[in-house]
Image: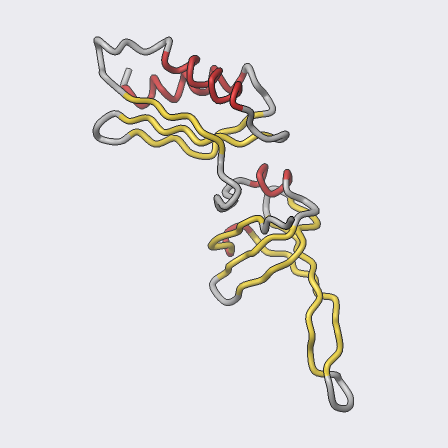
Length: 154
């Protein structure tokens, strides 16, 4: 079994023990540095990272292949990648970049195909001078999203 396949199988086994966690990214460099990025429905604790690290590390033989291992949670400024991450962040404000525009809006819904964003914008009045505030809503397919980042507010 190839090294990457073995690591992937061990990672899947470790994640099956913690159903609230999910994989964001698995990278194995040419120098056998294993980088695992996780997210969770309720966040990721230090103990979660330790448990997943142990599930991988204790089942690989360093005599067979030397490696280094890094298990971390997706950072606050890490772009969203999976539908599960979008669903977890419903109700939060996102900065979404598509091919044609950048939108800062509240994520109101997410499914397997698209996200629903809602925001208010100032636009010229239909009749007369000045601007009015209008409520906007857009369904954006994941394929159109270049990057989406949660906006942290304090």
